[in-house]
Image 1 (tube, rainbow, N blue to C red):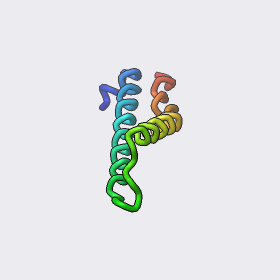
Image 2: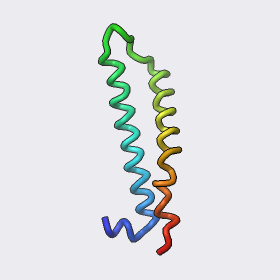
Image 3: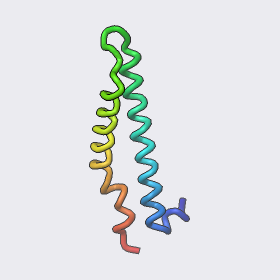
Image 4: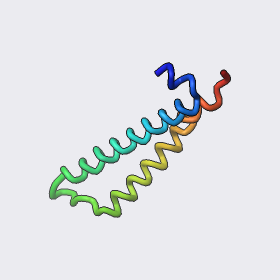
Length: 76
């Protein structure tokens, strides 16, 4: 980890990839939650899942972009 932290671009890319993985896991758990509710709420259509995924993605990156780009602005 210390090697990655020395190169600020590699560290920012690493944080971006980790945050993208978090978004995918959140979306996966979110869509399974709708499917497991059974007959009370019918499962989401594919387009609805895609719209929810895009919404989560935009919201998450808008909130975390300062944290992801923070290593690029630190003074060495």
